[in-house]
Length: 466
Ligand SMILES: [Zn+2]
Image 1 (spheres, rainbow, N blue to C red):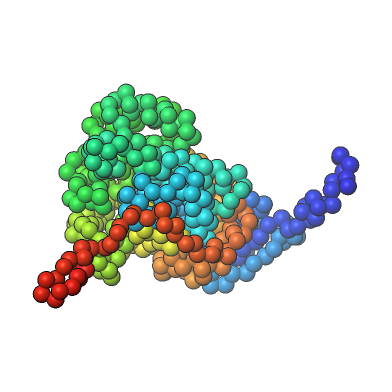
Image 2 (image 1 turned 180 degrees about the vertical axis):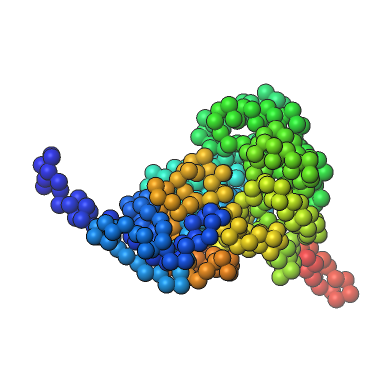
C-alpha cells in the first residue's frame, strides 16, 4: 500500500524506464527535401525530440538513457497517412452487403479488429471517407481514448447524397437503407439539416456524393448529382461550423462545381478538366484520386471472372492518368488514398500501393509519392494534422523504419511485415497479426446458387449456367 503524496513502487519503475529512442539511419522526413543519408531521429516520449544529421546530435541525448538503435541500410520516415479508408465497411463484396446486412454492433466489432491491421501496415493516420451508421466515429474515439490499437482517424460521416448520387441505388419502391453509408437529402433545407445533424454526431468532415460511380452503375458519370448552388450551400455551412468539406466527384461537372464552391478535398476527380483544375488552384482544393480501387478491380478481373463494368474502369483510369497529371502540374496537391474497406482493397494490404501508382501512372518521383502519402496528406486531417506526417521536433512520434531505400524502390512500403519498426506516439506497435476471422453467414448477400440450374433436355439432366 502507499500513502497519498508518496510515489507508489510501480510508478517509480515506470519513471525509470528509458525516455525514448535514438534511431540512426537514412532520414526521409516527409517533405520534398533531400534525405539525410547519415541521420538521426530522437523519439522522446510520445513526440519527436530532435531530427538531423547524426554528427549534430546534441550530446545530452547520449547521456540520458535513450535506447540507441543503429539502422544501417534502413530508412526512417513518418508513419503513412491513408487519405481514403472505410473502416466500417468490413471488406464488403457488394453494395447490398454493405447497405443491408450485418448489425451495427457486429460492424463496430469488425471495424476495431480491422483497425489493428491498418496500423500494422504502417498507417498511423487515416481519413475515413464515409461510414455505415456512426461506426467510424466510435472507432476513432475507441482508439484515441486508448482502448484499442489503430491509426489516428479523421472521419466523415455518412455521405450526403440525392437520387442522382452514389448510394441511392436501390429501387424507388424501397426505403433508403439505414445501413447505407449515406443519407438521402431531398432539398436545400435538408442539406443544412443533415450537415448539422452529422456535426452533432461528432464528424470531423462532411462528405458529399457529388456524382455516381462506375462501380455501381456502368458509365454513370454523366453529370453532377448536385447543382453548383447546392455545392455552395454545403461548403458554406460546413465551413461555418468549422469542418472539412469533401466530395466523391468522378464526373467532370461534380469536380468543377465542388472546386468552384470551395470544397477542401475532391476524391477521384478522374474527369476533371482545365476549368476544374483552375478552380482547384484558385480555391486551394486538393485531390485524393484513390486509383488503387480501379487498378485492383481491373487486375482482379484479369485473374478471375465476375467483375462488372471493367471496360468503364479502364476508360476512367486512362482519363484519370492524363487529367490528374495535368492537375498536379498546375499546382493542385494530390494525396494518396487506398479505399480500403471494399473487398478489392482488403485492410492492411494495399495502403501504400497508391504511391506506386502515382509513380507509374502520374509520373511522380518516389519522393513526391512519399510526400503525397505523408506530409501532403495532413491537409485532410483537421485532427492531428499539424502534429503528424513529418519527422520534425515537436510532432507526434509516428515513425516507420523500413529496410532499404523507398526513394529507389517505392514498393518497399507495401511490405509492412518486413518493416524493422513501427512506432505510434513513440511506442512500438504490437506487430502480432490478429488471427484470421471467419465470416458469419449473415454478412453475405444471399445467393441461392451462382447461376441457373437449367434442364438439358438432350442429356436428360440439369447443368449449371453461370
Ligand atoms: Zn470510398
